[in-house]
Length: 617
Image 1 (tube, helix red, strand yellow):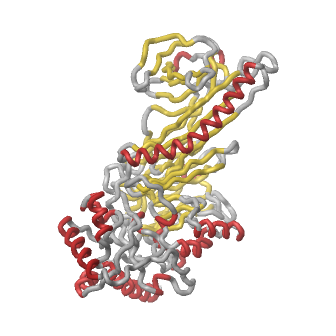
Image 2 (cartoon, rainbow, N blue to C red):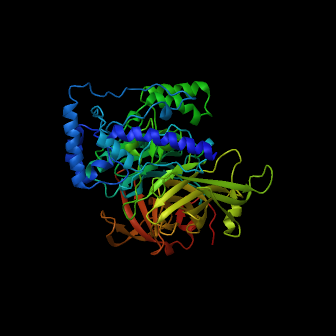
Image 3 (cartoon, helix red, strand yellow):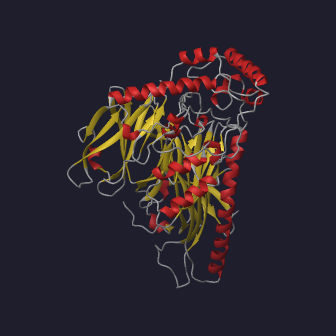
């Protein structure tokens, strides 16, 4: 293998020498003047425009290169401009594209065709002096295909801060069509719950672009809700049988930074599975929608290789996927190290000859910025975690208790060939993990400011939830930093974990608890206020509350809420032991938020109708 690697390394170096030669002077006046006006000199190399070598260049050097590019472009004006074909021929399996010819430089992300590349003696000397990204010697041959065009994994992308919130509309009533209900009868209800993503520090143009997608999804959802709500109210007034209706959409975030914002809205079906999904990919600099052809320069090449990743699909379905790829209409998501099609990662590292690599770089510049690197369908992760120009390799291998068993006695974390073994002695929760033998463990690497961490999610042994393990990836071996068992994982939004938790409040109330990945590789609770979104309920007797004003902070005077009031529970503040109730009437606009002390409900069933579960004292 050493001889094979040395031969591959020599071939790879020769290919890269040609590649860097072709890059010198690459660009056009229109390309770089646009980026210079839009982003300033310091941001020019971070996204589109001139391709930059491994080291950062200062402003004066950048200006010099722009001037040289403009001069070379003028000299080459008489020559026909380089035109990148819409689709390149699919590479043969026995002759990968990276060996067949030197790769061509990627066009600008904003679609301006570059001028013809010009090679000079100075550029040859410069290319020889520049370091090249190298392949690790320990990288297994069966995990690597030599179709990777050289590209530099940079550290100049800033992650946007974002929060998750929920839009909720509910209505409910006791079904009296069959006579008077029992004291603890559950209310019938019409519910609309939509989780949304809220960028906090993104420019206004980006915030408006995200808001537009939320409006697009919310419009049809609220129409469906109002239609069923009106039918429900009419049935209630005419004493006809009532019904339950739930419209629930979760937001799944894949990436949020100044280059790409990628997320999907998924309708949740009654069995908890995903129904209809809407995918959104937004340019993180100007708010425009990204299509597949913006990220994949060679659609034909992707169509040729997609069978390797979606090999579980029947031929007719795979053929339909290929047609959608070529028509540039396929739904996809963008994560930090590739794109996701049908939830399967197509990594940029193995396929960078067909990717626009401008969209795939690191994000370690900000204090809270993080880069989430996902595993492929085989559970394998390959990326430059420490941005030293050398690809790193990470895998997790369960050690099963016996032949055919799903339970494990240990897990092995492998980074760059260094194996570290963890067992129940390191944490008892490791013995609770169950990994299916026919599926690779789903995992991701979180590149934080203070290091790189591997997060692994496993089913719990008794089927009562999930176990989340976090390992710090150090050069001398991994270290276990966190192990958490949760009843249910509702969302994995980047570095945020949303779990379902239960409390004995009101007889076992289900909470939605938010955790964020913090320093030291541990998930920490975001705040003492947890989302609930339970109900609707109805007050059996009056209780005392304060109105929550529109600023969501100021409380009004203490007032009495009459019996019969219908409400759902939005939040619970653990430190203050207070609920936020949303009281509503027949019309959607008849909504108001009230704050209620939890200690009022000594006997919840005697005070609240619709709990529908036994009280735990």
